[in-house]
Image (cartoon, rainbow, N blue to C red; front, side, top):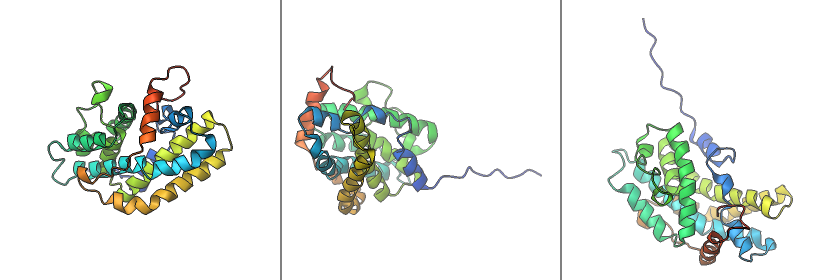
Length: 242
């Protein structure tokens, strides 16, 4: 008599969210400052970092979050990802991210996330849909938000949690970078992360409801774009890619 084989237990989606939010995950996020270094080098006073974090959480982070939510819905469709789904989401994200420097930075992060996805969830259709991505130049790789959407589809991460995870990851990345750029009490930076996440909370339901590429928020931050472009030309003062 043979013993029936049990399918491996799947972790709870909340556990996956904690894994993705953990700075110890080797996804490459340690090389990025979520735009903080470009801002500081561009003239942002350190005293204004808390307001900057809130501004980012309610603009750029929501574009990223909406992209991830839509990618998750399309890549996690019951009949499988529709043809051209990835390209459609990437085009919507690109149109809302005018800075080439920011797009390149997001694609570099995407390559790190893609390695995580291929290692941990290699057989899920949402991850397999990205199988041809990331193997060529950086500008051919999917951005972080699209890969995060694939992971969300593969693990059942709810849309609202995808939004909160994206906002938190951006804020925490900036806070971690701040301790290297402008050393201060780490708990002060932690307070600012919570404030940024709280500022984004009223937008969570709206962004979580996004279903098509056209629904992705278009809440840009032109000054951030300018700082990122200037930062990309800086060779000597940079600690982070972006």
